Length: 128
Picture 1 (tube, rainbow, N blue to C red):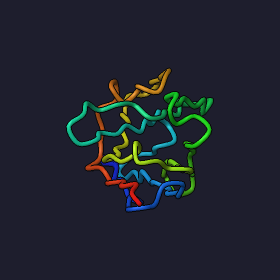
Picture 2: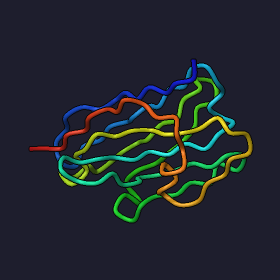
Picture 3: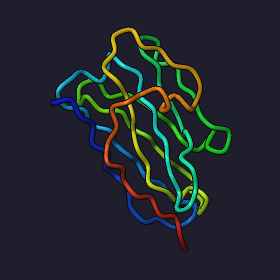
Picture 4: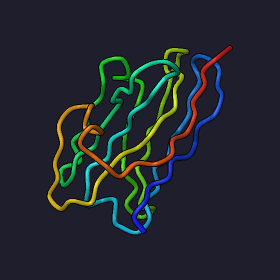
């Protein structure tokens, strides 16, 4: 069964850090692009970051540049989102998205819109 599972969310104070994980099963995540997106209460989903296939080019929305880092761990079949210097505006449910279409390449931080394998999300709350 092809699936991804997010984990690593929690509650942190402003300025804190969290590392989210997107673990894949049933397929090799390294062969496909992966995107993180989030949805805050009462708001539309928004793309956060993407990592491409083959060249691992990365993309970030402007508001997280310099604070968030997306990366692959091929041995663990996992993609991470390291989030530093968190602010209350980062509070949301975070999801990862990918697909299993060979040769898929993406561009931009909104790549999740084109990726249809998604997890159940993990909640990130930034509050003092």
